[in-house]
Length: 332
Ligand code: PHE
Image 1 (tube, rainbow, N blue to C red):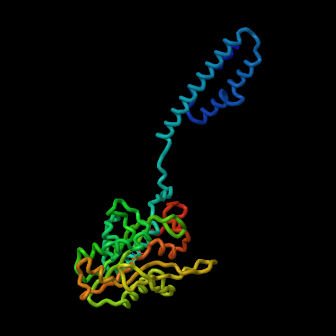
Image 2 (image 1 turned 180 degrees about the vertical axis):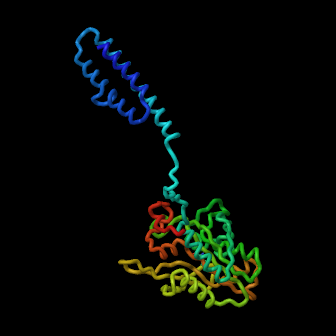
Image 3 (image 1 turned 180 degrees about the horizontal axis):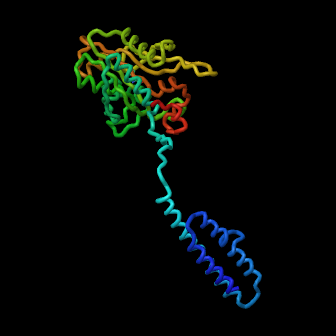
């Protein structure tokens, strides 16, 4: 049997020298390494041997197998790398592959729309920091130290005097401290509240604050501006209502609800913003004479507006970043 193994090795070595293509290589593989190939046959024969030479034969057979597989793999690698460099060519007639460039998140899409609408109404844009002083977030906005609204907001305090802003209203304070009236600005940004997460509330969301200060401003103008906004965002037929409300920094105050009709479900009102006439105390806090100037302000929830616009029923979907969800809203 030793003779036979030697013969096989010699034959194999002679044959692989002639191999030129992967098809020929495959034939060699089948012949020597295949399930019914020469090596497999030799191993079968080996099992039947009873002579004292069995250990020697076994060793030789194993070595032959190692040699054959090793040489075979080497040759295969050579043939493959050669075919990559010499056989491949660029097919210019193939259609191009489309690359995925990403797209705007629906929050950004909604923010873009809101910004565009208010730009059309003559508002400029300001931004303030997300880390705010307790004074700008509460004090200057007429929240007394022990006002229940202060804990109602469930604030993330960073230190005794600083916090993650709970609304964009502190940017009103910054704008009024920096600029002289007349003022007409919107202030978009992120806000934070320590709320338990649910389909309706999240610990982080976006607001767009609005502020107008001038000598002759009425609640009717505020209402007109917001109705025009709602109609531009949701269409002329949007169903809305103004509901009397309370905020320490506006008097009188209101909230605006939009009718939410989901297909196959009962419709309901969904609050999208708070608004009102700037409280004279706030104007005084920033050094604007309330005898001379009047202002209105509003603050809208961007997630709420997006839910309404796109018919989504769980706010958490907006933050999970699941591509299967996001891909449904690709804009450009
Ligand atoms: N800041 C208020 C809120 O977060 C909304 C608001 C802004 C109300 C401006 C009135 C005027 O709920």
